[in-house]
Amino acid sequence: MDIVQWHRLLYPYEQAVDELMLKFNYMKKEYQVLGRYCPIEHVIGRVKSITSILDKLQRKNVPLERVEQEIEDIAGIRIICQFVEDISRIADVISKRSDIEVVEIKDYIRNKKQSGYRSFHMVVKYVVNSLDGPRTVNVEIQIRTMAMDFWATIEHSLQYKYKGEIPEHADVRLSNAANAVSALDKVMSSVREDVMDAQLSSQIRNQMVKDI
Ligand code: 0O2
Image (cartoon, rainbow, N blue to C red; front, side, top):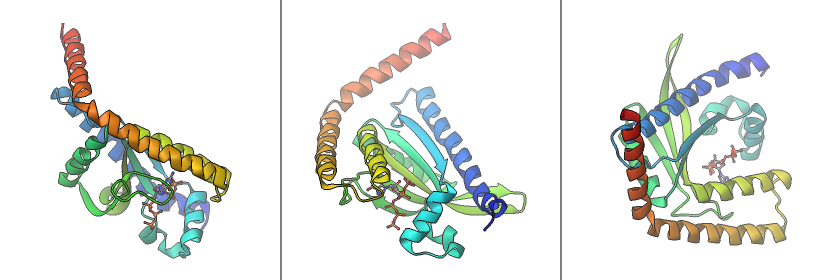
């Protein structure tokens, strides 16, 4: 496939990422406008690079013709939360949306990966409107806490550095760090109510200052 064909293939995924980022940021804004605690800390999105797509096809032993069927995370959205409890709240809101169809859930929080990875993944179908009419694409939405995200980012960098063969000394440390992250999430959950109250009060104060 030449570069023009790649751009044509990836274009609807770029559109899906841009639209969903906007929608999730509006969701965040709506919580604030309604004076409700916002379970979303921040949202990021990306379209997988051509190199990563090719690597993944090779890893999964999938022919290029099946790229759109087999690679579910060409378009990816990541929603970062403060507390573990926020994850299911956002997942519920997503499930109820009329513009998003959830087709698969991968709960790596209940079922932590061997690597220590924890995150809640939703594979969804999303329709973008193109010049040729509506087009449905897969998007992977990853929802995780700030602590889970910290661990995953570090582990991902090490996977890259060691080309997927992390040496044992680093592996043991990562595994200990994964346990520490789980413990941290638990402690943070115990102060969630207090933090929610404090954040709502400061939100209301800021709104009042704006209104004056
Ligand atoms: P990148 O570079 O982040 O895009 P499956 O067919 O379900 O077995 P798949 O498609 O890998 O396999 O699905 P899965 O397990 O939901 O993983 C998709 C993405 O989740 C990965 O994309 C990572 O972003 C993240 N992820 C999964 N496992 C791990 C892990 O052990 N460590 C970290 N840091 N991230 C993980 P890519 O394409 O692998 O990578």
